[in-house]
Image 1: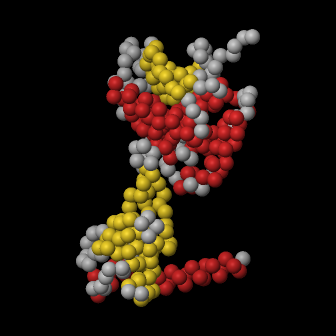
Image 2 (image 1 turned 180 degrees about the vertical axis):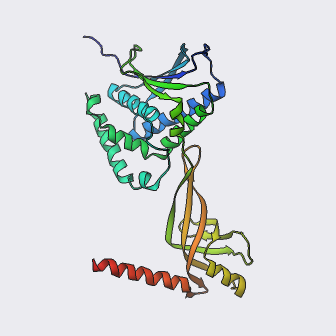
Image 3 (image 1 turned 90 degrees about the vertical axis):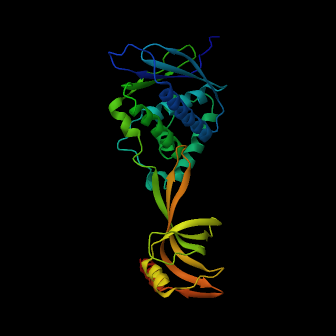
Length: 319
């Protein structure tokens, strides 16, 4: 019985200019790119709940070629990982990459469903490449913060390193035979993978409660401090409710131990270099109520907000 070779090798080829006959690359750049690539692989295998080991082989000539071997017992799983990795590195975005709320958050449920479908397909023996739903794969890739961020980092390092003119990715079997033709990404397209900003669309908590620890009692761009109920710890925030802020400064509203406000809180978010999301800034847009020693006072702007919400609700019920 003839043994079918496993599809378990991934070739990453950095191409230099025609006049450059060297096969060397700046060690810091190469190591940074390798780190980002490993993080992408780690996130892909985590998403699909697949355990693999990865080995690298000696470099080959022709620019600089890296060969990665994926070790596992299931050929179909390994093949799928190679497909996803190739898509991640070579599928050029149609527009400049952004972390958009509509793309990343509104598709969470669909993304989870697609991941489960892919996992179920992986459990079936004999799955062929033409049966894989590539649109589901792309959705998984495009709605994962960490994959997007590490891919952006990967191409940012290369974009700043002019020696690399293009790169290619190729799937190989264990005999180092090509499974597919190489997929190329030209230098002019590197920038398309780089995120314009690390900012993510902000969240709005319309029922936030903040226990005031340190109010700002004079004019200026100083930040307040308080305990945000939903997080349970101290935050610094900007008071953007001008009416409330002016009243505090002009009338000297007293703040006692246990004073807290109900408000509309805007939460700005970013992702760090590891693709982890964090809250970068807090702003109180509107103070709805102030609570002090068991007494609750609705602010004029809070009353306007409540009446508008009631009117909007009644309007929707008419339809």
